[in-house]
Image (tube, rainbow, N blue to C red; front, side, top):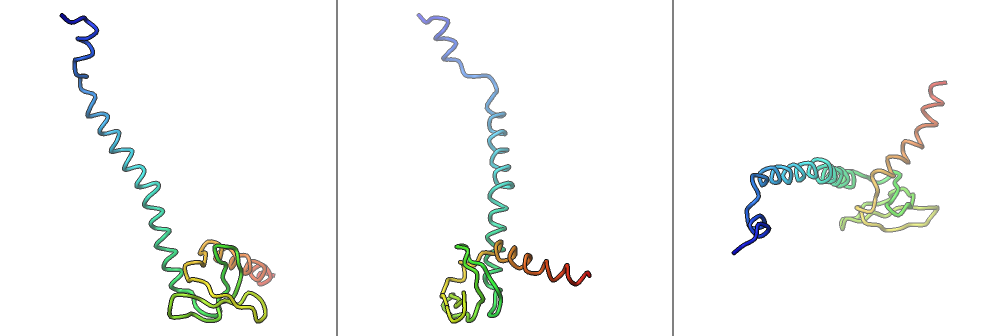
Length: 117
């Protein structure tokens, strides 16, 4: 002998499974396009930037150290000059693309303003 409550609890829910599945798939698609894909794109751009830097360029590392590349070593490191006769050896991946581009833009802004005059 079962009560009405037990009968209600034992019955399967009617037709809500497909909506939940569509909602879950939609969340995964949104996460991919708004989080995973842009992050992979930035990582690819950073890797391309790190491979393209050459001696003589002014850079900023991820730690905020400003310097000029003096030598590119075969083991993937760079020798940078941070002040007169002061050199640091850093990994090529330690160069920040965003901070370096912002630094270069800041350095070129006064020259561009002066050229307009």
